[in-house]
Length: 125
Image (cartoon, rainbow, N blue to C red):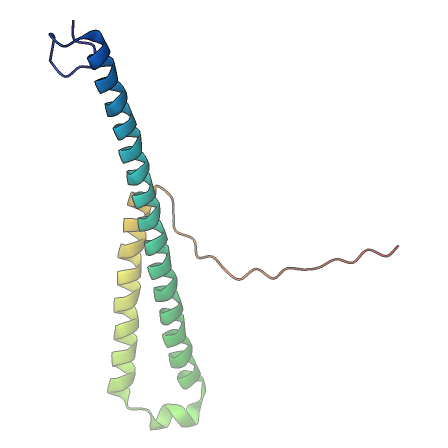
């Protein structure tokens, strides 16, 4: 009879039992390491997406501030402005692709973690 599933029907019951325990331990360690690897990948993607989101926002703010100021708008080279807008669109596309990858690997939609202000309430006694 094959106890540990390795195809060896001639080994002793005691040895087969030990082999099975070793394999179960190894499988649980490997599965835990794989789980940690998945979590690390998710954290890496989140950090990359956060950075990309902030970088895009900086570029958009810069373009918007230039467009709002008529004096500055006259001084800026039109081709440079179009180039910046094109770069922003490319970055947006890249961000969308990365968000799809994040959703596939993590099974959830990416949401940017915003700054949360803690409000302290004081109780009067």
